[in-house]
Image (cartoon, one colour):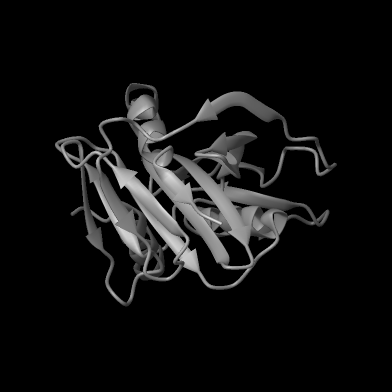
Length: 210
């Protein structure tokens, strides 16, 4: 299975990134691009904003007949349509527990589980910081709360550039006393609209029991 997300991380360590963060003489954090242009690292306001709750109720697809259970969090699993998605257990060196690939397509996913409860706002910040580590221009372009198989989760879409490739991440985030999870899907920005339904269908297979 292709491992684009982790390949990007590896490439970022081995090679000099085409995007470099720096501090201006005025103390502003900026991004320096390979073409000698620059931009502010955070154009968005830092004031807290209210996140809307999606009125749509999301549930697993009828075709998602295979239930993949987390080994780390006993109350977490994903219903998968194995005719469309393949999966494999990540290696011990990877941060994720499982990785997924839309068969014959350039769309991927991974699920990260940890047995530590993390406040949702903190988890959101960690996810964004990790994304910015490989794509300094990464930013949140969409977010909401939604009910997924009767559990309230946080949904976030991030867009950014990694090694010259424009990437979109769409993910669900959740945390409780059992631990925390990040369920991320990703593809190129140019293909996101084409694969959005498939990505959301996979995400909507997430099941969190009490």
